[in-house]
Image 1 (cartoon, rainbow, N blue to C red):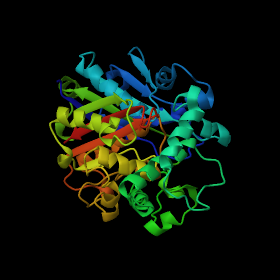
Image 2: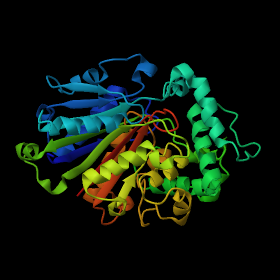
Image 3: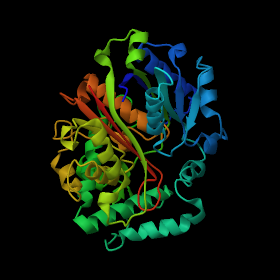
Image 4: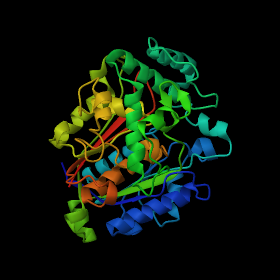
Length: 412
């Protein structure tokens, strides 16, 4: 297949950005990506704009990308709007890649932007309500929560304050993992402690405060075994990437030294399976396809960014990605294998738990971090000698897993 490179990335800070609109966030990330790539708006031949909740939050249900990009001079070219829940941005990246591989252009833009904060807390939380089948939502919730049966829930471990219903689902997945493999709450807390520690060195992170494992365990509860630092916050933010072919590199006059190769990009939907059929998880299957396309295996990966909407998610995903056997994600995390300096550093950015989770931008935020790592430009959070990087980004919920999984493999 045609070799495609990431030649520019741009990321805004993630967090509560009340004074910045979707347009503002888009402009900041795209301008940064174009500056990084050394290109102009007129060099772009296609743009893929990811956003999940602007319609819900602001009423802008359609032509979001055309509106966000026009004032920047991005016009005349195809602009495609992408909504794929929390995997929207990595889906936009996948589409931009395939646009180039199809020969439709030599330079393309993928960008994701999200405004999630609002003074109306109920509106913020209800943005997630359509992340599963709305026609049977109550039945789905009840069925998924029952997955956690068999693990005693200690008293006073559920927050009295409103929180996303998806936290109940993640907690059920966690208790299933605990019952099946003996995973402990402390092992989940080790994930959160590690990610918050990484985020201290990321100036774009929403939170930059380190927590010990004991501090994570003693933090305010959300729903057992989850405490507040184990859960991703609500975030605003944007991220963008400029991709190009070999011909695009030549046209832009770019040195390939900082260009990062895309070895694989796989987008896969979930399937019907039993909860205990872990080897049929959509992320596991997508990762196998991605490794085959990239010509590498889990042992070749130097650094990874995974979708840790909760600490439970990271444990599940490092197993799905083959970094350890099923059931070994908890012990692996507690040993410190996934810390910077460990066997396979995971989420050096701080992950969703600490860096933030503006859902329409999250996947490109992961890719931008990995491009920075592969270039050796991550400063004090640098994974030394990084050569192969993997991003895992999931979205929505269907059955007993994500509705969609995206795996991206990059190389120096």
